[in-house]
Image (cartoon, rainbow, N blue to C red; front, side):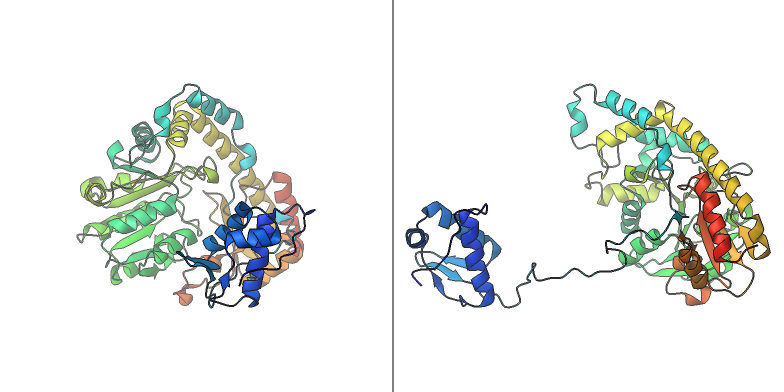
Length: 471
């Protein structure tokens, strides 16, 4: 082929090299220029269509980079075989209920995972950030320690000791970008043949993270005190993932006796561990907080403690921390110390200053007061529901549960609420898939209140009364 008839539009805003590229590409894709066909040289084509050689060279370079043509030294350019080549432009996106650009059908969303972002301490955060960056500290822009900044790890140790009774040293703390990252790291530290037990229902992100890492997950049912110890003992699991401070989604606060039973299970066999996800431990509205499992474990060193700043500050902070037992810490240092920390040193320094400046404690106190107010308003509005539903899980966290006293299904409750433009969340969606027999015996709905204003709580519950025929 010595020439190509390309009709260039000199008035177009599209560059000429791009017009040439598009013409040849489209003819190749349509089969008008077959596989193996020799294209004219860049010089010959430039002369034929009256453009500079650099223009045709740019067009050919783009075709080369995308695999439409290939260059044979001293021979020229040839069209490539395109069978099986994925056509990006022809691919149509799969439209689901989650990616369609349709308007939100809900006026009131009682999400159990919400955070009161309207009350984020912007002024304090700006002040701390400004102070951290006021000096030209070039060191902050270098890689830091793999475990995280020592100053922040020391601050976390001090905070955990006083607020949660955790006993640890800074060198046991690993900082990472969210609990999912830390769970993936912990997964690497546990023997690949060990099985994980998880409360059922449980926190979906943790389950998906461990499951996608190739772990066998054994769902363990729950009773009024938390994970069923008898069932755990009868299983082949050697690691138990639990949320004793405020189990999500059941809202159970594990009592001391059950905690001691769980610690006894871990101590009875070498290689057993408990992953304590201290979910929502900052928000408790009745009685004193129960100390962490880690702090109660004594010298057994069987508890891996997980905490996060995402719920107390903001989800976008993406900063969590793990306290490792000493044997796992040694394994981490031997095999995974080469991994760079996943949280920027700047963000770590800001959070450290935010805590040490007293802003974190003030923010937590403000959130506790805010959530307590919304919690009390919600419970007051739910009083008419008590004839039809059992209200529970109300002593801590940022959601409560409604369990139907009749035979109505969760799907019907959710659908009726949606007709009134109210979004509620069924408990069954948090149950482990492999265990359908452990689905709740009666329909149970989660009602969150962290990110919904008091007036909207009242209006939303009023709409639920209409939806569920509550008098």
